[in-house]
Image (tube, rainbow, N blue to C red):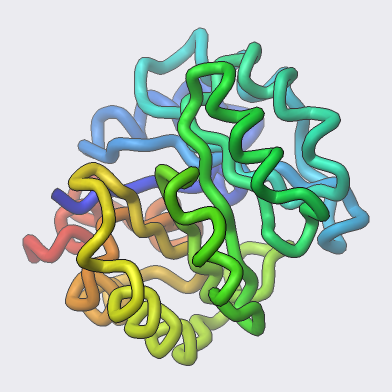
Length: 217
């Protein structure tokens, strides 16, 4: 099963309820929420109040991606707001193992994101504490960027090292430049969750967009 996670970074925030309804109607599985602080990445988005709104407005999985410094200060707030998955950046966590355990202590799924130029050797020490890994295929901070193909090599390396030891429900997610041209390159390598912003929200038929991303075109 290929999970599709539309990123509301590309949604019409003035009509968020309608956009959330459209995500549900399209057959997508997750709502991806990009939290940016203007420090870790050069952009600012929103805080727990939008997660709370989404939780009250939708029963889909809320996938919260913290692109922020000192994420440990805000993890509890986002989980209490309704997050089902909390993803922190390896680059922003001095004590990554502690943060992953902290996320799981609230009953949420723990995930780590890695930027395009970040290696994966650190996973040797935290892979058993993860429910999901997010490979960034653009540099985080803005939607609409071009896919960085070197992420494909990184996914190959991940599969070689860890593929035989992952739980059946482990999520391998990619975010950045995911569209009808790149989705097949990713799913062929075992990626089972695709984050899509511009492609999904700009498609004239969002249900069709989901089908294409899943490979059903």
